[in-house]
Image 1: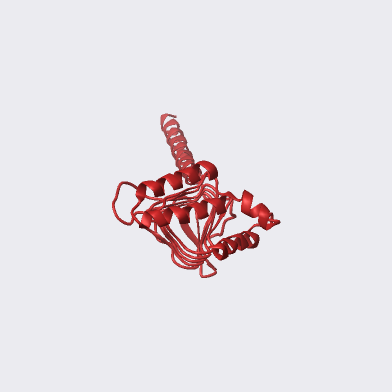
Image 2 (image 1 turned 60 degrees about the vertical axis):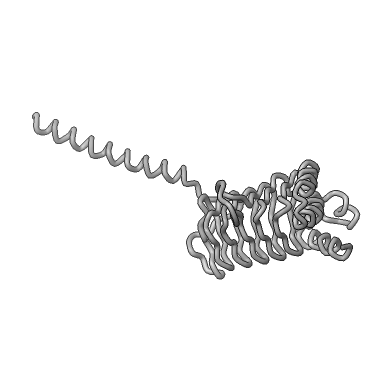
Length: 218
């Protein structure tokens, strides 16, 4: 257990340049505390002691701001950066060396039964505020951009951005114009531009009709 805890803290030093000492990381990193509490809760969950497991997870949520259902399966070297607002559902499966940021939701899409939460494969990264919903798979080495909403499977080695999520890079090749982490597509603005273009076109046609009518009268 101590070896596993040290491994978790080593990941923090690899991922977070602000980390300075083991004491600081051990005492102040809420992502670590949430992961450690989840491991305890998950043991009780597997023994079908569901009430105790949920109590532990809710106490952890109260102190860390991170909600991990005790039924979720999480691999090694999992890193939650900051972590406030992170939600991980019951049937989530998270592989090794996965990183997620604050505000991420790995959730369901309704009241369906069975496997209803995402599977995140090894070495994936889910950026700030992203929502990954439903029984879908995020492939190995794939990245989900900040604020993206992903409701379909993502293959290995892809980068996904936008609402809904779109693949912009696959196997190192741009699928479409790449976007900055913070500069995501805005479908509302795109729709408004389209509507404005149609209005301008109608105005032009109306003006031409007026000119024709005026010419006919003269």
